[in-house]
Image 1 (cartoon, each protein chain N blue to C red):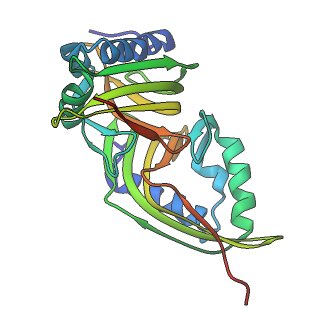
Image 2 (cartoon, each protein chain N blue to C red):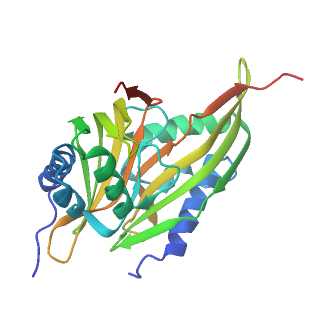
Length: 147
Length: 143
């Protein structure tokens, strides 16, 4: 089956769905956005990790009932590098309330988050993330939420 | 054309850091594709690589000392595109009119996306450099 070249619009829609699934705590959809071999540089991670681990941690800390995720996306730049690969880079305002296993909650507000998502087309023709790099342009301020 | 090998990609990554450290005669511009984008430093969004290259050339011209240590370079190849992700520790001393300044990025994280150009050379199509810890900037004591 010959598939059309990836379009910038398809990629932007995927990015929107990614953040919609994340903020809507739709774990199954969120997890399916990544290829099994995908790697992630989280905002505060010292090294990259396999996306499976990132998803487990985000599900535990950011997708529980007492957690929250908000993302306001800026303009999404798309570079289609081949029939099956596209790179997106964009700024966003990212706010979270993180719930830790000990019951404590932490609020962080990152007004200048920068995101790189690299998408590839899988065997079924679906665009999935193969690599993610998130970073903040400024030091991140984290505050404990009073109980 | 031959499939891109992880060794080729790692070699390009080394070239990038040699250039950034001022230890290579290779033109910095040749490392990037014309439409490349870059996220680095305190920039709030991606910028055209040409802008970053122009700024870095000025910085390299002022560099009196630089060292870099790269972590293991993870490489994923998808057709004519390769993604390199790795950590780095970068230190540079720049001479400025108001004295020398030492800048140290101890927990750098890098993503480099390479694409083969029409001549078969690997060029950077996208770059994202960031740090898990604040970059240390300190003036050097004068002799």
